[in-house]
Length: 129
Image 1 (cartoon, rainbow, N blue to C red):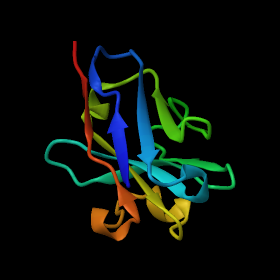
Image 2: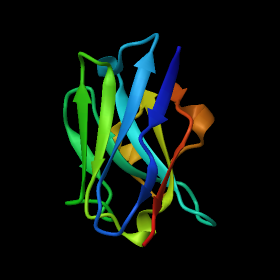
Image 3: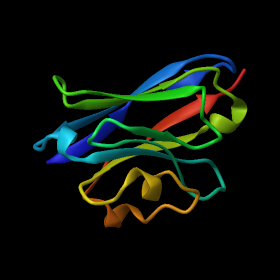
Image 4: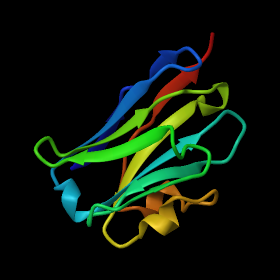
């Protein structure tokens, strides 16, 4: 039973990347799924969430540029990132929780990783020219 994030890489400013969060051993559509990031020297922040009822939330810092979606067939939640900026450079993580609402995930002060039902390893996104 695990959650695995992938899709990070090096991209130029203004470019795009799509991150994937794949679940194995459990079904994602029963959970609220959050994306988090931690930039060098900064605290982790919650940036997006897909609730099990299909609603989505975004932090102001990514609103209008990032899109979260869920594909039940592949048991995957995606984070499509466009118009990437230098300040988007970070390690990105995904998490799944049955009880925590998206409003509790998309915050500058998210809970520690051990407080989520499932936490995936990070994938590094570097925005650089």
